[in-house]
Image (spheres, rainbow, N blue to C red):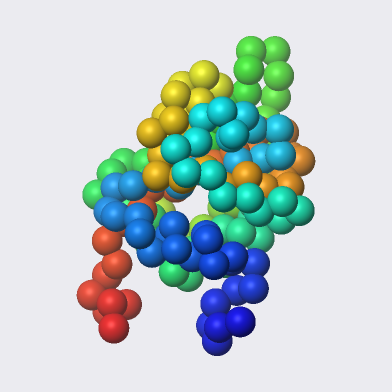
Length: 147
């Protein structure tokens, strides 16, 4: 255990976050996501919900301020609907840590899969909410937070 670091963050996930550079992306994937077949680096966080992981990660991780959409989610497949409570939960966490972060963009399911292939890492969670997947692009740590 470390002071100030959430116990939800495994040593492997902390290492991934530390090694990521500006502009690298990390996918927080739901339990149904094909992470094993898409991931360049895969981290297991089974049993954990994505909103809880975001709350643990975002005190350590700045979403990219140099892009229009540092956060990306999967849009619903035609004929399906998004659960608004999923976005609400994620937005509450993002706003708690980085309130100036732009609203997430939503992209097609297969575009999301393609983008995930080039992500620095995919974190497989126990999230069961439909369309619960989210990609966050890492930014530069502001100078006032760097020390």
